[in-house]
Amino acid sequence: MQNIFDTKVFKVLMTNNDNIGNGWKGAGVAVPVFSLRSRYSCGIGEFLDLKLLADWCSKVGLKIIQILPINDTRTDDSWDNSYPYKAISTKALHPIYLNLSEMGTLYNESDKEYFEQQRDYLNAKDYVDYPEVMKVKDAYFRKIFEQTWHEVKNRNDYRTFFNENRDWLIPYAEFCCQRSIDKVQQPEFYHFLQYHLDKQLKEAVDYMHHKGIALKGDIPIGIGRDSVDAQTNPELFNMDCQAGAPPDAFATEGQNWGFPTYNWEAMEKDNYKWWRDRLTQMSRYFDAYRIDHILGFFRIWEIPIEYSQGTMGHFSPALPLDLFNLDLNASQIEGLFLRDKHDKNKFHPRIDMHLTQTYNELNDAQKDTLNKLYDDFFYHRNEELWKSEALKKLPKIIEASDMMVCGEDLGMVPACVPEVMQQLNILSLEVQRMPKKYGETFVNPRENPYLSVDTTSTHDTSTLRGWWEENGELTNRFYREMLGHHEGAPYFAEPWVCQEIIRQHLDSSSMWVIIPIQDYIAMDGEFRWNETQREQINIPADPHHHWCYKMHQSLESLNERQGFNDMLSRMIKESGRN
Image (tube, rainbow, N blue to C red; front, side, top):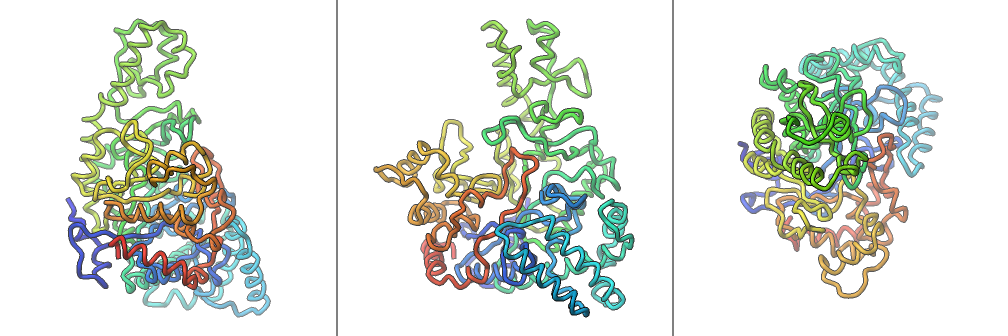
């Protein structure tokens, strides 16, 4: 079990702070790299923009920057590749985050003028035009490769990079050469891009560390079905299955992410080497990481490849049922249960059993029997199995690095999850409007566990302002119960309302408070964007959502926003998180 204060995060923070120990608290900001806006990037946030963000964090007293996954996702030129959780490689970085001018200056004057015009055109857009940005950058990559490769390949730092990463870099480059979207058949082209990506990201991270600011990454629970990992290690994945999530308030049909599920038995044979190598590579850049859908290490929602809806899934692993003692005929069983893929004589209750026509046609006694069986199956029967599964995998994977570990433990959470996370010192995620205790509507941040990350919203939810406008009745309850007001709530989340809410979170009992940048800026009425709904990063119910949120404000203007920065700095100091 790792000691939290021995992790990389606290080694970084010790640069400027010697008073770190039990009870210490810090604050940070969450923002995808692609959402950053600066004057010198090209239509999308880039790794080197993290330096400007670090300047702002240093000004106001924030200690950690949390980003979304940054691995290569490209399978074609479509918007679908804007989805950062479907990587084609768990180690290769996405070329879209490269700063063009830092790769080298083109000799041809007309080329230089063309790309400057394209940069200005793309920067003027109020969203990330993913396909267009990728098209422009790819054209630049090819020209700068032709111009500089003969010199780059002889650099000592390039040779070092190649030798340190050849085990994954060579198969990745071969995979890229085989893709239909790529006209470049030189593996060296992809080595070249990854070298520059590594160089630019490390430059940004070194700059952050010099300022005493840590970087927190995100590990997706799945990989792309058409990925180099699945191609080179097919035995590690169940290609006949798809990972997803059961229905919830955000996705009533459930979610089908399309990823193959993991063959944990095969992974266990070599002590989870694939996972351990993945974490080792990630620690090259990151000081902490968030395990996306940590529940997947306990059990995953598995959907057979022939189905598209998440409602047709079941938990895996699970202890399927023998239904011989139930007073049901064969057609009723088929309507209420799903057959186990390993033993066709055993069954899993359908997650949407109560919504089926078959269920509605049963008599009260049959319904009562099924309700008890359903409740036991989903909330009791598999708890010990799921606990043992997590304790078998997580410790061996975590020990592969000295990064601080956080888990996204939202959704249909088994009762064993908090116990295991506490045992392994994995920080939980606490979202005020998504309570984990049955019957609660909101969470009081002061009641959060210490080993947790507190936040106002996530990339999968509406922003603080967006949520405020969704349900007036709920907003009024929050205004009275959480903020202590007696009159009716304002229709919009006014700047002073956002200030009260952010202050409440900064005063939470969590070790970390990491707030989305949209919610911080919401405290400044003149600075925030008036397009509230467009600040939401993802809509989980839409599998073809365009991940295109771009900050309305540039990082340069954020750094220059003196009044706002002074206010936030004061709030952080008063909370004791500085």
